[in-house]
View 1 (cartoon, helix red, strand yellow):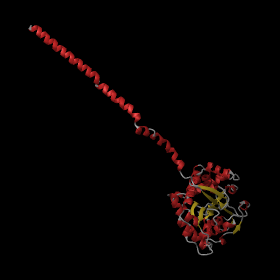
View 2 (cartoon, one colour):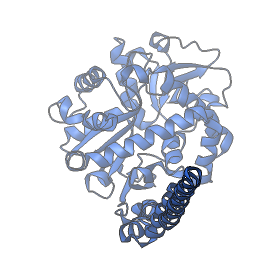
View 3 (cartoon, helix red, strand yellow):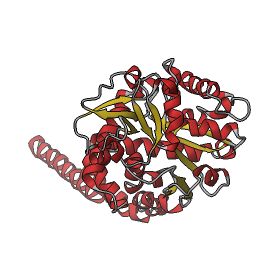
View 4 (tube, helix red, strand yellow):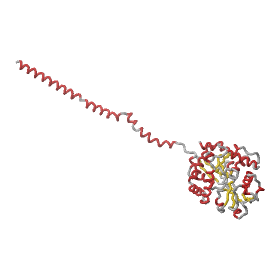
Amino acid sequence: MRRVEDKRAMGSRWLLMLALLAAAAVFAAGCGGDDDDGGASQDAVQEQAPEDPAAEEQAPEEPASEEQAPEEPIAEEPVEFTNVTYQLGWLAGNGVLGEVVAKRMGWYEEEGIVLKIDPGGPSIDGVAQVASGRALIGQLSSSPSAMLAVSQGIPLQVFAVGTPEHPYAFFSKAETPLDSPQDMRGLVVGTQATGVILVEALLAANDMTRDDLGSLETVGGDITPLLTDQVDVFTGWVTNVGQLSQVPDRNTLRLWDAGVPLYAHIYYAGTDTIENNPEVLAGWLRATARGWEFATENTEEAVQMLIDEYPDLEFESQLAGAQILLGVKENAGVEALGGFGWFDLEVWQEQIDRWDNLGQFDADAPAIDRVVTTAILEAADR
């Protein structure tokens, strides 16, 4: 009986255990496992992401801001250009090589300037053009012209110098020595009407007078009097190779080396312009300096630009003259002065004093600060 009861008891326990296992299985099936929970939770996040209004609005904003960046220049103000007339003291040639280069390269436009170059000539008073406002900037061949204009009450000032050693010189044939002014004693000197005062300056600087010369004759610009022995000495610029090539074996004495320091290619403007429009002059000067720098490094290309601008000029003679002029500029120690356009105030004062001693001023000699200013050079360097 006990065994039967034991078997019955054991059977009951097994039945109870099976029932509990079955109930647990049903419960587990209804609740699910951990992997299902994770999957269900992930699916829920993925389904909700597109429904997030903030996410939908922000997503396209980043690429849109990148596309807007190139549109910023459209809103910029258009560049305003200043029309500038540049009046030359004489006919165009290699003396405006840098200006022509800067014009054709577009460097004046980069400074907000549209440049017009007006050549001068024997019947054109360039100083009057600038003083009257018909031209904003002027160029003079020689520094004394500026000093004389200021002494006459014309309101202008020199703001830069293109060539800091004047190319004016005295020439003789090979058989006539010309190493110093003393060699001119007893010789017939031929010069143009505008060069008489330069001969006088050379004589005064070397303790000489006209009486020390054989004679002083006024001649034209043609070198024929020297070729035909009408004169022993002829005056002109060392850059005038067209004339000088007719005397291949010649002696040359520069005015600068003979004790008369003068400047050439003088840049000037009215005093009102210098006071009220210094930024225009400074921009013009920066572009001009770039033009001359390019001409120094690319002379043949620069001369071709000059010929393109003025087709009546002859390439070979302009090239030869430009090479001489650039050599003068380089040897003048422009960098030592401060760079293109700079000058020595002591040289200016010496010129004023010399012309005063020669009686060239109708009134008192002009003060140096009325003749020149460094304000534009300083502004251009900033």
